[in-house]
Image 1 (cartoon, one colour):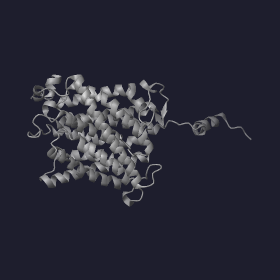
Image 2 (cartoon, one colour):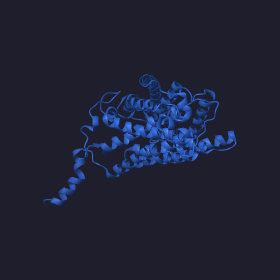
Image 3 (cartoon, helix red, strand yellow):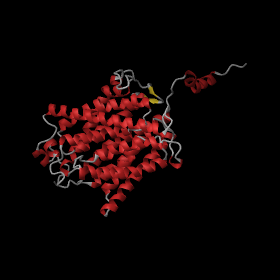
Image 4 (cartoon, helix red, strand yellow):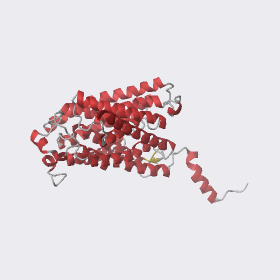
Length: 433
């Protein structure tokens, strides 16, 4: 038998070596996609969420909200590198990871997580860790001290976000049960929404609420930020497939359909109820659709996504009206009724529309070991309830501790009346004010 040439042997080694050895290999296409998705998710916070929230507050507080988003991005990035990533995704136990990857110990250029560099996986997850406490800003906007905000965000990241992330994505107890949370319905939206509600209750309403209308000062800014969120959400949900494949493509399609359905539903309800559709309504409905499809995006088809988006627009609208008009709770930028309620709804509906027996509304099947819709919904319900209770209790405790350490969470009456831009940062958003 003729001996193969050395060139042929090299070719065979390149093509078959990893497969024969059972080793993971870097996939350049998937790596390129997750690099892009990572940038898109950071783009959601800076500048997307910063502009979205900045336009929703009064003019005297616009810079304070943008400043909070930037500061949170900075402090979370450092904490995630130091210990957050290791505790969230380290082996540990069913409730928290270990400290084996503090400061990315043992992770080099060639270290892989699946088929992408682990450094990239860590960075992708960092952008999720950034946007979650940034979302909470909407619950206490226009009234929290900057020092209290920084300390609260740092502690909350480590004691709430990191453990829940480990439960759901890091090999924790909810992941082992078969919880479906593709891109953060529990990890991001429920935790942020519940934390916002608790913060609003602990701090009390803005002075003048609800008697004085506190309308957005710049809807052009808000709509611009909302558009950035819609685009960035393709990285948020599509990137969570962690590969450039059909799963990522279908997640992006489901994301877009739910956003459109949520926007049109909220707009239509406003139009019928108040006589005119509003830009605020259409962008809020869009965000409701996006937040609600997030946990289900990789498990449902476009038909299921359409229903989820329609339900998101109606249910989140109703929750927003009830919270503000009936309960009189000043969750300033509607984080709980949009993100919190949307995250709960989407997590539960993932258990419904992942079923393969719903015709055009079918999804892609239940988790391993779960054989019925009822079984999947039960796991989803446990995930929702556990995240709500844990987040509510821990957030309340953290706020009380931060209040004691900073001499109170809230600026004084004069500072609130003057506006946080001048009173806390000695800056103005607009020279003509």
